[in-house]
Image 1: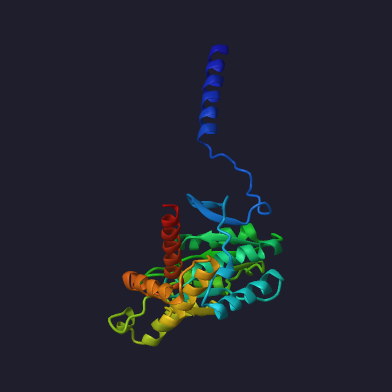
Image 2 (image 1 turned 60 degrees about the vertical axis):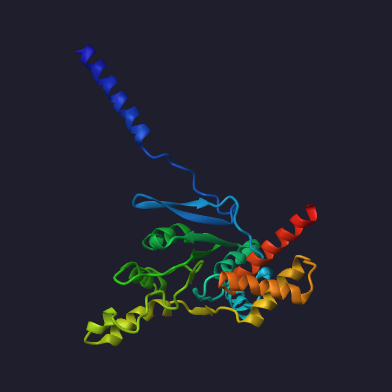
Length: 287
């Protein structure tokens, strides 16, 4: 009898050791006070916040040509960190015009006042209830940042986001806002014809459902491609900050040639041109 008991005990010990190896490790909760930016990482049906060790602390002073938009977003964020009423923000429009940089730049300005940013991917939208429950009650203020957000026809995730933005039966915590960027004004495809609304008895209802998501963002700001004068003004500003020693006419000629080659006139294109120009000039000096 003792022999059988010993065998059973040994078997149970092996099973226990196996279960212990297979069980997920319980990681300590992320330290929000010691970190400024976070990502949401999915793990099966659940997920966790992961601290970003080296967040991009972008300087908003480097954003040129979008002063009115920048000031509006700063004002809304200042209200938010001061525990005053503020709105969710949607930044939409041309690529490369500073939408993402504007959101990232808020961290450097407002982190000392308790702002934190949590980056979400589009497919993390359905995890918003989990994320919100973890952040509710924290003394910090959180921007949930959804970069390059858009939805295709037939996707159901946009309805989940619409409900969460407007609030469902659970009250939305006052220390959380959603800031999103998108190339689409209403986050959904918009077609002149051949869309799903053509077969609707009441097509205005189908169109209204698409518009309802972007309407949930209290502040919606559009970015447009620069015209030539705006583009050159941005070039001059970047060149002055880098102390690039070229005449204005030579600088503008090179900048327009770059814009013609890249087929873009945007803040990103201007910064890429200045990086290329400064690098070439320094390499020539070294040679």
